[in-house]
Image (cartoon, rainbow, N blue to C red):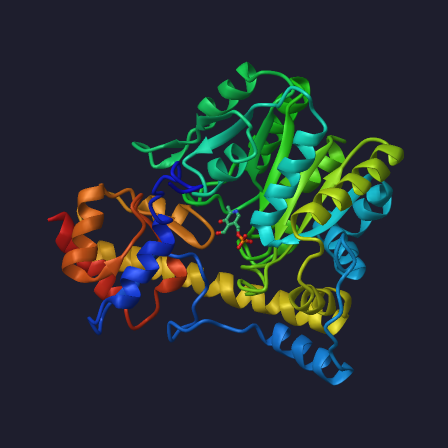
Amino acid sequence: SSWFNQAQFIPPDAIFALTAQYQADPFPQKVNLGQGTYRDEEGKPWVLPSVNKARECLRTKGLQHEYLPILGLQSFREETAKIVLGAELFKEQASKIATCQSLSGTGALHLAGLLLRACHTKLPKFYIPEPTWSNHHQVFQSLGFPCESFKYYDHEMKSLDIESYYSMLRQAEPNSVVILHACAHNPTGCDPSKEQWREIAQLMKARQLFPLFDSAYLGFNSGNFDEDAFAIRLFLGEMQMEAGVCVSFAKNMGLYGERVGCILMSTVDRQVAVNMQSMLEMLQRSEVSNPPAFGAKIASQVLGNDELKQMWFQDMMTMSGRIRAMRAALYEKLIFFGAPGSWEHLIQQSGMFGFLGLSHEVVLKLREQHHVYVADNSRISIAGLNAGNVEYVARSITQCLR
Ligand code: PLP
């Protein structure tokens, strides 16, 4: 008999398993469009020049390896709040925001869940868009929250289903939480327009729904951080709503493995913010004691130094520009090869992901016959495309559809 007789076998995470499958494939022309990590024109991971320079600065300053405070690096937390809110809103609201450094975006979502759970005897319901990032349900279900999906995407029209969205908000149980992708919705690449965001905010405010922003692509989506932070600033600023913002620097700084993130919880009252801050400290202490230092030091160096920050803005333009160019290239090649169906959706989406809208059967064919690795739901990471493989990918998709 074992203490673990009741352990069940849980299948591996689909996206990580897909990466392993790709790595084990000996075919020379294989293409990995699975995992959402940026790749340069040669298909290689890219260390951002701004991040490289920040690393050099840290090295010359002399790194030590002491613990960070429980809430994380103070300068990093402050700079994060400043850039996410923008200077003006930050000045106005800094004293009403609790912040805590987290284990990247995932850790921020988890901490947000812990805080919301600790503040409610009756657990609020979570409304999560369908489709969504593959980890949302798991993170919040593991904390005991009842999770309900709502229709976000119209598979036939291949676009955001805004009427279903509004209708969910009109009927949602008051005092529930809604997960909002701040920009570059994963996996569909379809975001609400500014007008639609206004309507969403008004409906949520009227129905006392709590906005929890998942913000993993700020600045990486359009190349302009302010533009990508539009919805967050609308809810917190113009709409004066309480909200949670889960920030990740994995994609926009290329700090995937360093786990650099931050949770910002805005409230209406300074004393409530002080209380929330103290609770975040207690929750963090019991989970990880204190967060990792190196990545936060890099991010803080970039955000806190004007020259490095300008370099970083340029780096984000480089990444988002290359992604946009590859999106257009794939679209043009699909048209050129006469791939059946319409592909307009591909160039209307934004962000790192393209949602192809292919059946599972076609996805498997792509993988097995052409060594092109695409997530089961036919999401592709556009960053995996480059001038050397985009034609091969477009031809493979066309052949699988014929
Ligand atoms: N949220 C969304 C929508 C994502 O796409 C991702 C990463 O792919 C994350 C959160 C979490 O990323 P990380 O924990 O690496 O910051």
